Length: 287
Image (cartoon, rainbow, N blue to C red; front, side, top):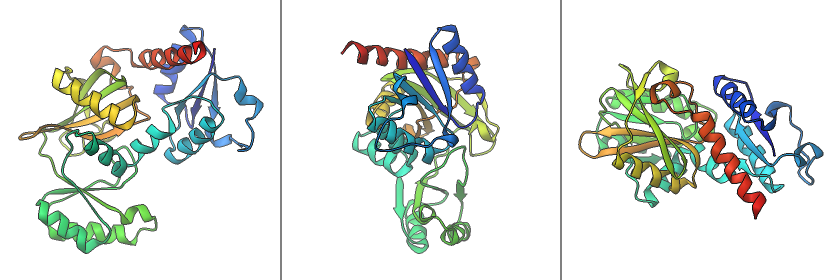
């Protein structure tokens, strides 16, 4: 068996995965996605040796493009292109969750600033404006009144990307200065952490502190249904605790970071990821 790990940069997460592969004596190669040249009509000899590819690319667009090509050639990729495409797009994620009756924050979509303001005021302030794609809490904006909403929307209207002109609006959830990140592998909730911060954006990339969060039966059931809604795989599911509605699924990440989650949970996340990939590869070989 031989694996490839597609990466843009070797972060702590990739180092942990590399160490786990070495301990298991699994043959593998690290492939820099920035140096790839792919002939779409035929699989290159380089790729014929791999039983599967673990995608750890930092670039969402690049990772998705390469995954589509590899799957076209018949190479299994974790996560799959279909799952990655759904999770990279907050609109598609929300629609998939709604279709599966998974609880989410109330969300509206507008295409012009004036209708976006109308939608926000129908929901009530404060509200959260998000880009359709992106991670690490970048370009999030909580707007507390009409002046703030109009100012943020005006800036977005002047940005060049068409994605900034899709106004994805969520009702602000008054969470207890924390959110929850749960890790699901396959259909199995693995563990979860609280991410606590005085700032309303509770990403660890923004300085949030992590601690263990017990996976309750309710959380496990919601996370399992959320993972199934987007196609399953190796996923991080972000949940919000609403004082009235309970747990709501906020986002799902298909290329998750986990460096700050191993110590508080006591779970060997990189080895659990490899368990999933290797068991799937073995099943494919036996078919």
